[in-house]
Image (cartoon, rainbow, N blue to C red; front, side, top):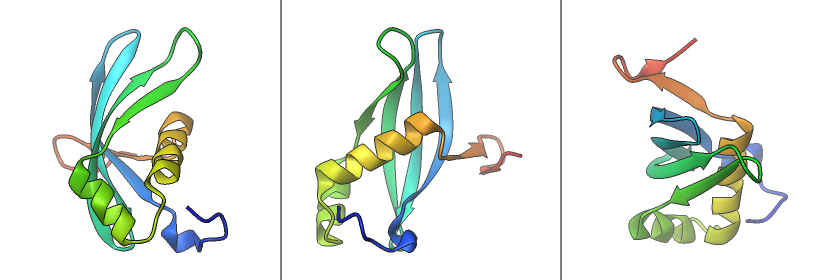
Length: 100
């Protein structure tokens, strides 16, 4: 991903479901880039070694990102960083709306 991209290229990340325990949580949701909604699954770890995200994107999602001209490895690192740093929008699972 080229660093001098426009802010509008920055993905908005929505977490639809987060469940887990003391050491790890499973996350599912989607992100929007270039007006397209793409799904993701992830496991968030937060104890030994610091916070980390194991991100899973489908082949279809990776192909779409390539079609948009992104380097998929760099883009995944961007998503992981945003997830770790909490740059996400949490959705209420019962209403599928943004939680305050």
